[in-house]
Image (cartoon, rainbow over all chains, first blue to last red; front, side):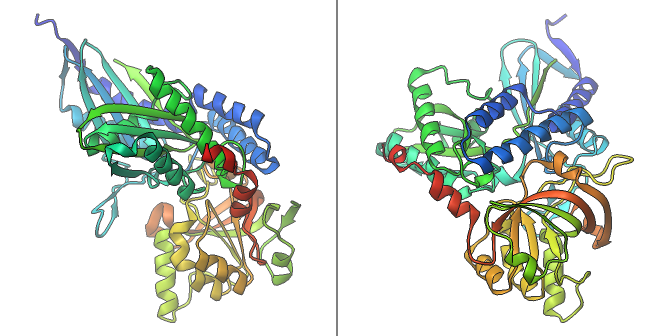
Length: 284
Length: 189
């Protein structure tokens, strides 16, 4: 016995299919709580009506297993594979793809993926291929997270590389401008993911990972947590409000992830998550 | 901010009563169309061909629903980002379209065309797909079936909740909202 833990691709495929369907219909508790709190503190009457609809929508979706939103999104899958895991029974990437395909087809979710992106744009009919991010970690578990990412918010993603001296002020201006210019398109109240550092693609992935953190859980580093709070206050001072009708809550949270970066560089990515902040995970 | 019940087709009389911020419940027939269907409709207009349905007085809802489960009229059906359809909108307004439902704001050319042709842009709550689908009592594909979720559907809706975003007088709910709720002193700090 080699000490490796075997996991069959069949189990992985089934788990991915289940997670796709659950994520589409069941809003996470931390998101619900944040939305309820936003409703309590909202002062604009119209914004309160909007939040009432959002909360009632979550109830209806959960009770009737209906998708929360018609844009059931790109299936973004995060895999953390323990280095002592041995995947058996077939191709891991194929299994993930089939799991997404079956989850979306059998779950009556929308096929929203087009092949030939710069020409014919042909719908792939089963919402594949997914976007998969894989990390190797210590241990013998396989941790799968499925994040259905809507196009409305994803299309408002912005990225830049600043001069190091632009620092917090530059980042603040960039985040505020990104949120303000996106208006109602990303379906506020949003969760703002900010990735700072690394190389270009690191910052982008960090911003995406940032939105998978539980809503409002502060960064473990106190300096970063303080910056998150400052940004949240300023984003909410923009006054966009729910669906941009005007109000106190434009963002439910700001999450920042950082990485050491080149001495000449300050890459900054902003990835917005809509209020339909869908996320389901499983550990095999 | 009034609460009003409105039944399409919309006339000048009806749209003149609607103001930015009004809570409106739509009952009656609306049509769905988004990117691909709009491209085809504009092509038809340019070639002098008839549109797949008579747009005069009608309301178009920008939506691409999830597939219905057995026994369901329609799947989840919330609005999509309207700005993507801006380039196709003035021509449809000129052809007599009187109402549009979408998510988020419109650009200046559309806002001007709405005033010029006396039409209203409504927003529905983005992400409230399950809730909105329950106000849709009947759905049938009337054109471009090959487009799947992007086909033109004729919907019969009941008390479908929308908010007037741009009225025929040039008022814009999203601009008004930001102006009222923006806190400059916090932003400058």
